Length: 448
Image 1 (tube, rainbow, N blue to C red):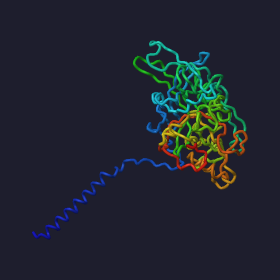
Image 2 (cartoon, rainbow, N blue to C red):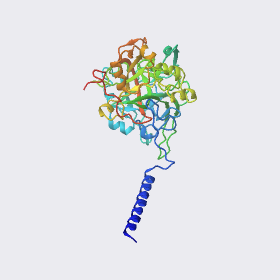
Image 3 (cartoon, helix red, strand yellow):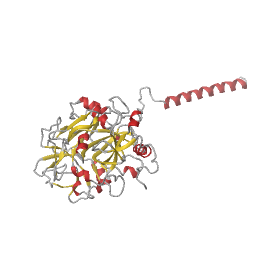
Image 4 (cartoon, rainbow, N blue to C red):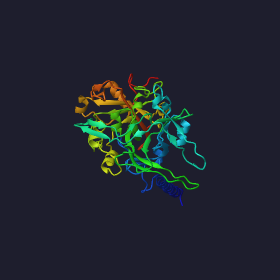
């Protein structure tokens, strides 16, 4: 055999080996045909809307499950007692202490430590019963509340000609004397968000809510636990969709400081929260609040991906109806985006601890009114990021102004005197990490 022939054969063998290695690399690096690639969600979309939300997407770790198909979050339900001895039931959502928040699987909200500044009645001091071992082998102690909500009123939300402003309204639940959803246990300085959501020992009305909060869609009170076990009580509550840092989120509204706000949020009207520290405070010294951005006259339409705001909610989200598990038209409408779709400020998953630690469940609403110019040009589009909103308010007052909630007329942009207790639950696409824009100079961004 000649040297030339040997060289040709060796070259051919090398080519075959290289081809085999390349094929193997492709085989090992390519996913199997049956493997599913992660779903990509479009900006402004709602993320996952069916099935159960994966637990890795929860900020409220104590949530038993989030059913996106039913628009509900299932939460542990804890026993309490009213001053007259009536049994009440509450949920636990946020705490001002990080360690205790982690212990309970709830949101850490350090701003709650400021809640009683100038408003002692904003924090309800409660006591814990002290059971004997025979009375409580394992489980929560009963909380003795000083005040409780009255769930008996009928919620009224009669739409006006454009949906909003409302023609008439009435809250479906009102906090009684001494009631606040924010509690401090006597002997402790930690503030918790622990709203009462049901009253009584059974027979819970989850259709018209005469003894439950307006977002309660199901209640299970566990029987006594057998030896060595713990049976948990729970409540299913209708959650709300919104946005933070460009990502879709889920949260739960339970209380509000104004009657109209309580109606729109299907929440308990708690007058004291109107005085919580403090309007316009955001991240400044002594503030217990964080900002939320809502819109009066965003676009409408049940299939419109740009729809958002108060008019949209009343026209497209069944805002006038009672929420119940059997009202599938309402649930499906909200699942597809019929909510207010508010934009949140700070959120627990944000990369910068300055913003993640500034989260508070007590939201100071900044309400926006699109101008006639913006509406006619179709610029009243869905907003999904805090910085984008206040940059727009700072640079384009010809498109977006503030609004007086009492009159619906334009007003300077900023705090509108609306306070809402809304605990975040999680996110339905990617975790919010950072704002989509940097703040423009002299916008309403806290200076540092």
